[in-house]
Image 1 (cartoon, rainbow, N blue to C red):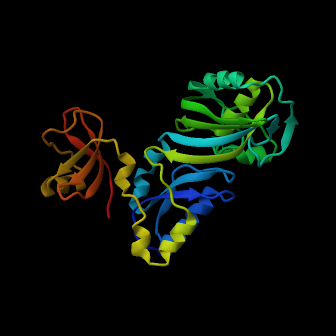
Image 2: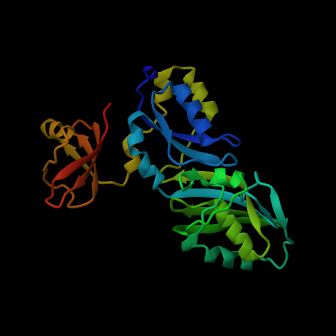
Image 3: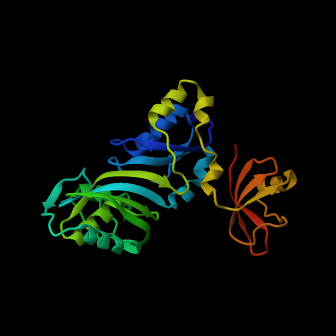
Length: 300
């Protein structure tokens, strides 16, 4: 068996993914720059989309699911008056309709109807699996299958600008929201159809800053120490979680997988676990008897 090569480097890279490349291609490029042994992304962006793609390196991959579950923030442009096969500008135009009898009041009313808890049917061009096969693969074969509607939360949905058939919006939404489907649904409600012609993600959970490839490559010329300084500590994924600090003795027992009791710990839920010298150990869950049980520990 071939040995895995690369550096053991750990943390979160907040990448500004450029337009025209896949999330996996962006991940592999970052992995090569850092010469990281292990890396993964936290939910992909379409090729058309730009913006924040958090990448987990090393032990941070153990916490990636918490970013998958995080809220997302987008700025998008909807082109009114047409419907495409994919719901975005990369698809084939299937239908055009006149953009008539539409005013700002009507747009605001429709937008408001898609704010709050909504039901959304995922698009065929998505990575959701149907009988073990990704929907987008079936869509490329010209197949359409029934999809279950999902309950989502649109925390805010606002108009940034509207000019003729171009509608610019901002959306703060829960995980699993497809902006392409939102554009299509808004277009149908307006009676003219719509698709996403531009999409930029500017926030994931509590992360809103991001770095482009030009910056990464500039730092890479200075060496790994400079490059690694761009990484966010992995515990920042869990920014709003309560934390507990353990003595060396208690930290030992936690590393052995044992639940421990400490004074003044939260009475329920999840916690970040640190040593008393500020070293991040991982996450734990409060048991019914008040002890803290380790659930996902990191090792670096």
